[in-house]
Length: 114
Length: 111
Image (cartoon, rainbow over the protein chains, first blue to last red):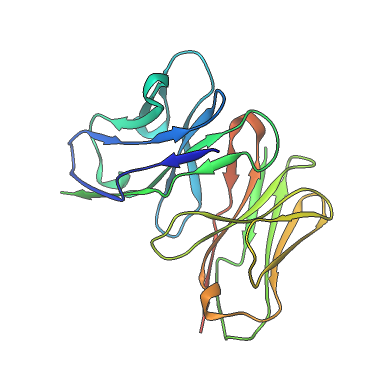
């Protein structure tokens, strides 16, 4: 069965510091992988996605993520965090076909301190 | 371009009152549509999804129902709201390889 684990419920970083949000997945086939960001009171916005090819993918707002098949991980990174990055981040794993095919982690809340 | 609209943005309803939340998608046809709920401080819970007009799949038993009267319209309803129905409701459509695109959400408070 598909599952996504985001082990960190809440992370606090200082502005300007680097960031890594962890995501581990369980999936029986080659997955599609996504990271979404949700600002308070807003919907989810797609940050980046991985389908195939280069395992390091670049997204919006300076984020990147690396797919590591051997570790079943898709961690999100940013070299220097800005105060505006404070939000909830969701990792998701999806099938390549069919409906109801995207499974979300429980999210990691990021707090940025000045 | 494709867009998704969700309304209202906020709603305060008394216990026992009915509910109707609407979601419409523009710029695409026959989309897969989804309703999610977020309780305070919790993750996403899939409530319903639809692959076409009149086709609704329910993921969890609850006080809510969904309908899809038109190709690009997805409605979440309740006949009698409970306090536990409070939360943030999100509609989404499936872009296929592009993942899901979410609406801006409805904050429902049942009092």
